[in-house]
Length: 431
Image (cartoon, rainbow, N blue to C red; front, side, top):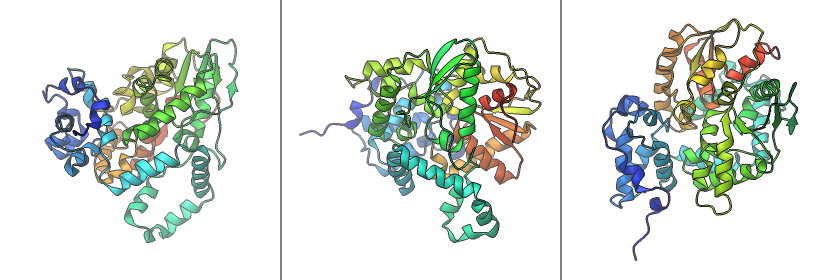
């Protein structure tokens, strides 16, 4: 009896045929630019995936798995592609049938993301431990004394990537309902996320305040959870589907004009719920409706009649295009439009701002050498702007650039666009 090919259930062969192997994507692919290897280019990976689809090679082939997981999934090739190839859908389908090669990818990508990130009590416990480690002064002590030298090199590097978590030991949680300030203009949902409330609670709080200032009643239902983006990137499709169902059920009863997210990687996946659950008879239509309402916070604010910010924020900033915002969602000008409305702020464009920083979900943990090489090129461009502040729309980018600044011994402030809008509305000041 013939063994069915699992890739057939996840991927339409027409998607693979859309790639004409023209090579226009090559210069936009970070791994190809670094390695110069055809198998580590978008068209090379698509060719390999087609070989698996046609049964010519096995998804268990070690070389295939190596090249598939070496991809950053930054989707820059999608922006460059004249044929409109949906590379993100192709690579994530391939990862759903191909196990990671390296132990770190299995441990972090499957064990931690599939268990800790899907259970809020465990994630909260990990967050409290991290924030206590930093707020107590223990992190500073172990770094100054060199105590970290007893750890394996890989763990030392992971600790070095930990940027300062916002807020106190106890994390900020969004109220279930935040009233609009002034006349009600919109009813919106707010997705807190998983990483954001643990490490970027101040940014979450700023997001809710900025929405409320702009006439939004903000709903943040308690049953929501992780969006499933990191699980999708690491091939754990079934966990991502379970998480999608939970979020749809949490927000479904609410009559909302939009569902707001402030993390680019999350937003990209949330907007793909219709595709992710397209074969689920109970959730397919609900997922499509949910996804149609998802808006990145900059996308939403740039499209409405923004309440003018009046407090000057006299800083020189540059903007880092998060891959899953610019390439995954096509959002490029909206954050810049908002920044230009802040009094006193000087926006300086960075060369190749839409090239990946090397964070790419958990890529900086699973492929540290390649990630650092990508990061070093990004830091060269950041430093060349002369900016004192970098605006990034994704927590992974923020942590990666904080790490890059520490490596270069450069004093840089990393913020989200809503952090600066919050200052311009007079609610917070720089730390």
